[in-house]
Length: 332
Length: 159
Image (cartoon, rainbow over the protein chains, first blue to last red):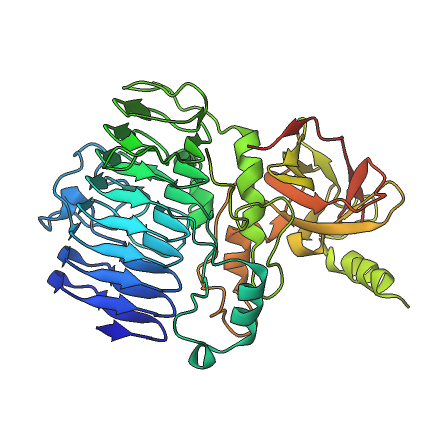
């Protein structure tokens, strides 16, 4: 048991080869178990709960085509032609619950996340390409398979909580009160903020009252890369396949608010063989191989997300135009 | 002097015109680049959002700080507003409860579109969101200190 770290309970930086097994990490100000710029790692039978950011965080992981050490992981777009290669971090048989995020990882490349449960967080899993200074951008090539991602409706953003968090030092807080460090959409199973060639396969995703799967593109400028040729380099070729959405493993109907919310942006994103209970946006999702050309983002979807950027528990706990911090109505 | 007036003066002062001199030049001026998309917010009946591109149609660089933009109703009354020069959700590098002393560095603010320099002729993505109050008269305008942008009424709902 590791608990109440002012930053992260378990912190692995620039490690090549590690195992974190049978560890319980709780109530950290940020992350329960974090690895950063680390590779050839295994999280096994771990538990993360009550953390201010995520329970499990593999970020800036080496890209799969670089795990033999022959390619500099910081070189832009290393795996695009080489394929996804081998997983760099494996996470299995673990639980992450009661955090702001069950799993997160900026530039969490080539993670193989399987046979875990992510539940009772604000958002179950998220990965992104929008924080500057993280090696390995843009994110690509996760394989998330055979997980249960459910009931992520834990609203850690209610106004009284935010007031308490912003007015109470970490040392003085009650350890089991989660104070969110970053904003996210309460009620979401999986949120991808700019990723490529990811594979979400054969998971149970249910009872997330906002969205089961939420896919947004992120222009490279938002990670500080202003190269004009890079501005459409996220939200491409992501595969969502074989998932059971809106139904628990024992067959009980437990719908997500919407199965899929997608800004429509990117090239080659596709959906196949998923079992769905409720609606999606767009209503018709593209079968594989998806669009051959890069599609622009739908402004109506951007309009629901962009204002959430303004969130700040000290100065803007309830920004106009953002409903992410309201618990969605339980879908019927 | 009331707080609104003080805020308005501070806003005007904050729009720094980074100019090369020359009395014939037009000050920086914002215009819509294309048609703005105005939405009623999802699940928030009093909130509105505009998604657009804006361009500097003046001759001088504009320094724009999203937090200092104010949406005003048809009578000029300020509304609760957020704005940035981006149309994509993103979050900062620092945890909300572990911000650096003095706030994030300028590069971080620029990356997130919270404070930018927009040269003459340049354009950038832009959003603003605001909250209507009982009795608010529309249409509204976005006041950026040395000028304002007229905002059409919302015709659709954000997703």
